[in-house]
Image 1: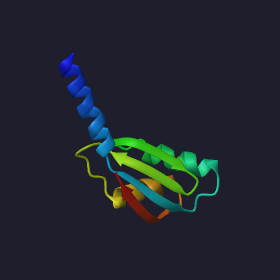
Image 2: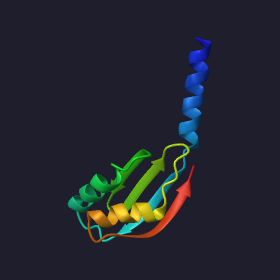
Image 3: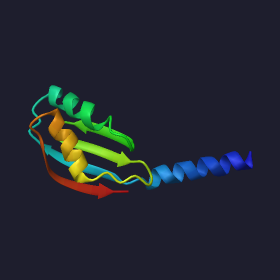
Amino acid sequence: MKKAFIIATLLISQTALAETITYNIEGMHCNSCVRSIKAQVCNMEGLEKCDVSMGKLVISPKTGINISQDQIQAAVTKAGEYKITGSSKSK
């Protein structure tokens, strides 16, 4: 029981420490845009979390995984004529 508690605590703390990156995306005009970007970006390997809404993409890479903005932009570009215009990080 004690081991299970320690493991659960470690897993929760790692998730809580995961970095969240929010990207502002230019060129999104409808829900089809959201779906297109979600299909390309959220299927990338190494993501713990991925959410797309109008004009915004939020990801959390898995612990130890580094995903560059260039990699995200490449996936966004595969979805259509969209461009990252800014980003912010938080924990």
